[in-house]
Length: 65
Image (tube, rainbow, N blue to C red; front, side):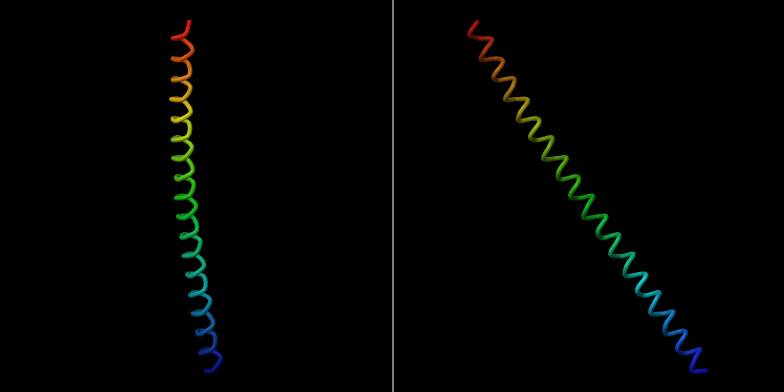
């Protein structure tokens, strides 16, 4: 009877640890997705700023001709 009790306790512990590990993995994936999205937005903003800067430079060089 004691063996049965200990086995159930151990299985419950392992199940809880597996559930916690899965929750950590999900949280990590969400953080990475948010970070990746933030980087893409920053890159898009930088490209847009660089693109508008190039357009202004072209207008300035074209106006001098």
